[in-house]
Image (cartoon, rainbow, N blue to C red; front, side, top):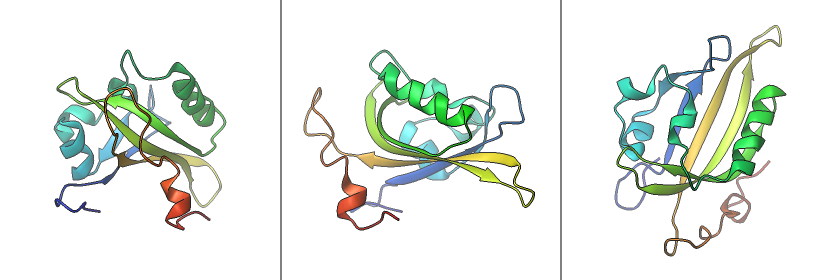
Length: 135
């Protein structure tokens, strides 16, 4: 999905929990474009490379717990681009199961969230509800 300036505002990655450290096995072009990493730099790594000093440890714990329990998670994260700049994203994590009900992958969806200025909360982090996109 593209924004008004034709930039990618929604991106995603897929991880494989059967591999050591649950690495990214695929990322969208938008994910690479937005984070500043080439797809080759992303694939094979755990998503935590996007975390940094200002990433909320409580948010990290929520994601880890969701992965541990094969559950969904949705939160607004502060992450880091390759150049070291920060960005907010509304992050959706969902487990993907095969026909037998066995966990196969995790899908992570990132939606860019604009901020008013550094140090302020993202504008309307509850946008999903105001857009009527919730289940």
